[in-house]
Image (cartoon, rainbow, N blue to C red; front, top):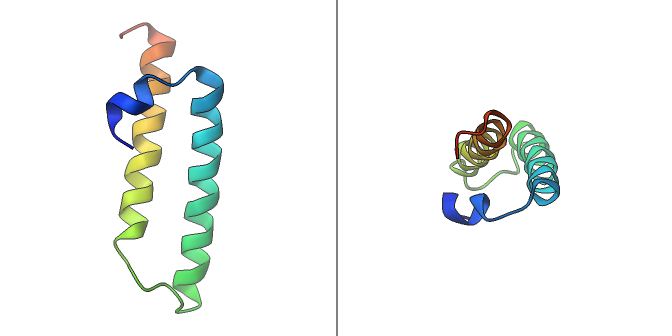
Length: 65
């Protein structure tokens, strides 16, 4: 998802997306440790997704956007 798509979500959906991203990161780390992860670029992509979601949530909390 792009940043504009995340910004259009309501707070409950943002929280749900964040929980799903954390679960996905956990699964990727598990697959990495068991040598089953094929695409190693997935880890940084999920981390960026989490950072974007947290940034949007903080912006809304502070009333920036």
